[in-house]
Image (cartoon, rainbow, N blue to C red):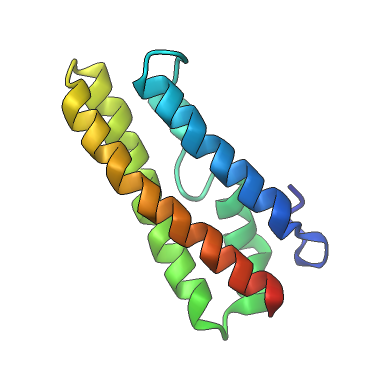
Length: 118
């Protein structure tokens, strides 16, 4: 995903975001390995890099941008929480964390859609 706002691909951003959601689910189901390092911070993932590099520069006047930033931070906190809980042998609590991830993820997609139209 390009970090240039002129070339930012909202569709690709949504696809990458959704693939992470499925990857986390696969991890919790024992089908894929995942570490905290791979969950990265909200500033190190592609969306975070775009937000803090060019996204705010272009869209700071839109209320959806601040919401996107806040909910994106929350998403990464829940991802880290799910991975940590699973690693500590608490799959039921990890699943609860995933259940909190789903609506957060859905909201991120809506916000990306809104921004792409503006």
